[in-house]
Image (tube, rainbow, N blue to C red; front, top):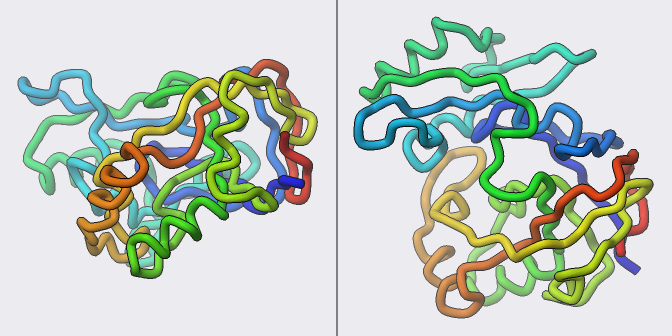
Length: 222
């Protein structure tokens, strides 16, 4: 039987997230997930995300919500504000103009909830031949208790995750972000190469929220 073993929320898109014991799943995903995002304003990428692919140090900042307020920790361990000073720092480092956008429910690449089966990650790890931190896949819900790729049987179905009901809409196509160690940003290009060759570049499933509700560690999924 599949169950939730980890819950992750990413208050600032592309930054490291926070691990939770429980979270409300709203109509637009986990409460507070991807509430903020950086938008590229350079002529060749106007209006597109400024994310890990453009600036890998983003993932070395840790973001969490404390009583609804953003708590942001820089790589050196200092507390920083998500403000104009940080925006200008990223602009200088990346040599491109940026905009900070606060728009809950809109800062997503696809559907609002991403589920990853840890058995699929473990099987893929054997194929790649190197240890893989599952955080590379930046899921909201990591589940266990399934066979590898058994989550694909959920496609087109409505499943329960705790009190929430989710429609599993599509597989998640991955990018070079999964090649990066989530702590050091060191890259291992073979990770994406093997995923392309053996799994059509897919890992995890996207879900649309059908019925909001609370999800917690240990809750049944399926």
